[in-house]
Amino acid sequence: MQYDTYLSFFNNLLLTFVTGSFIMQKNQITEGVFFMKEPVVSRVLKIFLYLTFVVGLVWTITLPFTIDVLFRVFRNAPVLVAEYRSFVLPFLMAVAVPCLWVVLEMIWMLNSIPSGPFVKRNVNALYRIGVIFIVLSIAFFAFNFFYLNIIVWAGGFFMIGSGLFAFTLAELIRQAIVFREENELTI
Image (cartoon, rainbow, N blue to C red; front, side, top):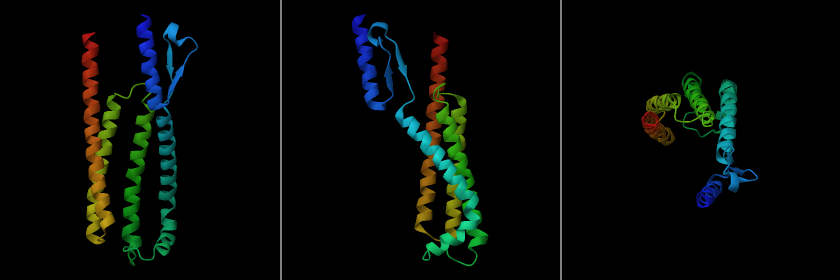
C-alpha cells in the first residue's frame, strides 16, 4: 500500500513538472489526497482568448472608421483602389464576425474543461469551427480572384488546414465520448 501511495505521489510530481498545476495538501502521502488547480497553460490560454476577443471586437467595430488610416499607413498595399470601401471593408467585416465566433467557441470549450471536456457540446463546437474555417477559406480564395495576393492565398490554405484540424479533433472527441459511455455501461 505504501508503494502505491509513493508511486502516485511521483506520478503527480511528474504531472506538476509538465503542467505546473499541482497542489498538495499537508498529509498527501499518508492520506493520498491531491488537489489539482487549473493548469498554468489553461489560465494563460484563457487570458489570451479573452484578450483576442476584446481586441477583435474593438477592431471590428472601429474598422469602418480606421480603414482610411490603415490604407494611408500601408500605402503600397495592393488593395489600395478607389472601390476599397465597397469591397474590402465588407469582406473584412464578413471575415471578422465568424472569427470572433470561433474565439467565443474556444472560450466556451476551455471553460467546459473543469466539468469534463468530453461532451457533445464541444464536438458540435469543433464541427461549427471547422465549417466556419472552410467557408472562410472559400471566401479568401474568392477574394483572391479580385485582388491577387499571395498572403490571401496563404490565408485560404491556412483556413482549410484549420478547418480540417477542427473536424479531426471533433471526431477524436466524439470517439472518446463513445468509449467513455461504453466504459460506463460496462461498470
